[in-house]
Length: 297
Image 1 (tube, helix red, strand yellow):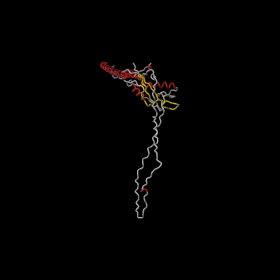
Image 2: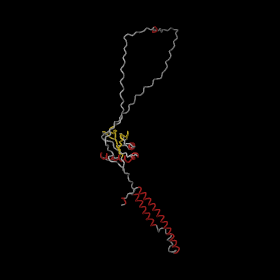
Image 3: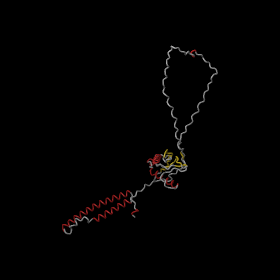
Image 4: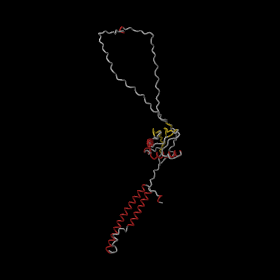
């Protein structure tokens, strides 16, 4: 009977306060009672000293009462402590929370920007050269360079040293080509927390339930959406990377009133997923997550 009891935190605190108040009341009542009893014994000792000689100083005459009173209070406190239960907060999950009424057609982000090819070089210009070329005679073309013995030879001035030209720039580094992004793979990514299940269908159902519980336990309905009675489905798109992290988060369908921002905030809080696989290889997968905003009456 006692094991079937269950007390919430509020009930436990209320019971402890009642127990403390009861103990204080019992102590005050006992003090008042003992004071009156002592006065009565003193009066009896004055009239009949032989009969009441030791009754006034008997400190154990009320020990049984206090012992059983303390025992009862201790059992009540122990029962409250052992049956203290914390109830999990109920999470409201709308019906068909992961169902989209229509397919979201969104072009996936390109993995690499392709530059247009350079234009072809212009054709060479051909100039016509005449067959005969007139050569003008120059009187100073041939100069006498002979020297005599008395001629003083002076060394030609040395050419000035010039700094070496700078080295050519290094070739441009080719950017690593990003991995392709898939929309459908053999094993789609899923929310973590159900890896201990053996069957694939059970893991998928468990992952969907864990995902819904995470979203709707953390989401906060915007106040402006409550005031204007805004309801609908917000679709958040992101990429599940091969390491399970979430990237490229964006809202592809918004209903306004701050619902899109709230949905993106919750998605950014998500832990790493179990990545998708294509032919046993972890790949990048594009994922569309619908989040339904529905007012609870």
